[in-house]
Length: 51
Image (cartoon, rainbow, N blue to C red):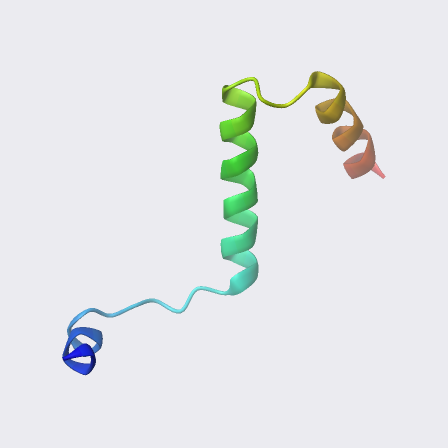
């Protein structure tokens, strides 16, 4: 039964790094939208990513 479902529904092969990057961006956006991240953490992350 699982073989027939797998044949009927094509599952795209998405690279792992794309899934990880997308998940981290969405999670960060969700936390920022809900004010769950302290502003100092965002500031330190920006400094880290700048270099």
